Amino acid sequence: MNKKALICGVSGQDGAYLAKLLLDKGYEVHGTSRDVQMSGFGNLARLGIKDQVRYESMSINDFRSVFQILRKIKPDEVYNLAGQSSVGLSFEQPVETLESISVGTLNLLEAIRFTEMPIRFYNACSGECFGSTTEEGATEDTPFRPRSPYAVAKAAAFWEVANYREAYKLYACSGLLFNHESPLRPERFVTRKIIASACRIAGGSKEKLQLGNINIRRDWGWAPEYVEAMYLMLQQDHADDFVIATGKSYALEDFIRITFQKLDMDWKEHTLTNPGLLRPADHFMGVGNPGKARRELGWAARYHMPDVVEMMIEAEMGSTRAKRPVIAGQAAG
Image (cartoon, rainbow, N blue to C red):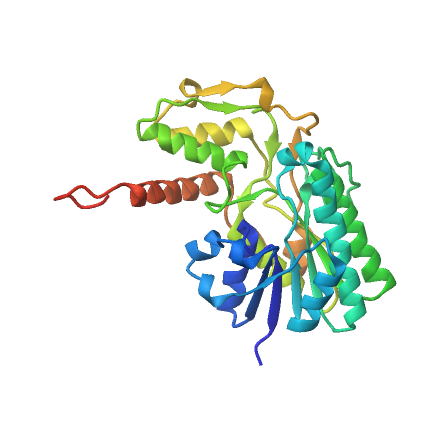
């Protein structure tokens, strides 16, 4: 029989790519949303898999709702990708962020414990938990110094998972994923905002790209690769936590410069610094050391930031061309 996977947060970037990966491996994939009938699942449609996923309405903050879905589906694997996912937005919605991430994770762990089913559990943690890192990169043993409500919530969820693994012997692990991008990101994420704005400007828009601190350095990877690491974590003999990253950092200014450069433009002519976009607290350097994942999972990033920029531009330009109206007598393109 095919394995069953339950993806909480299936409509997001990682959820959509993970669903495609598992479907390709022959899994029966179930995905949750707070209200299935009101959800568009646009990312899944974009990947051409919307009709292949089975959907369930579930409120991750409601223990009974979580417990009922686990009893109904009886999954072999549960991937927790749900919760508020934007660092910037977490400063505006700290309570919702903390509840959706830390309480939601706790409900899943407790429900798995109560069902007594041999479920393998993956929790989406974040490199944001480390705060500012050294250039050598954070490892699984680097202490946490979270600098945002989002990072605080992810750190709490990380320790919940570690505690349930130790105290209740659950197969539960966390992936400490550093920044990973794709065309499926919404524009509230700075990378997609840069790509989308630059492509519009290249197409003739007179807008200015407004940004906050462009001196920060981050470790940017390619999201479809990172979901492969999630899957691999649940295929090991023993549950453990892993840093997933490229191991290379770039300044946000580099991301901007390369984006405009690939579109034959000078980024300085099209960008503005907006103090209103500065975060109340931030960290300068964020880079991970994926050595353990390479040794134990056989996972290593194949794409780095310049590759990510190029692939996102290609997708954005293709999407823009697809949206253009076809004029009579002309081909679209």
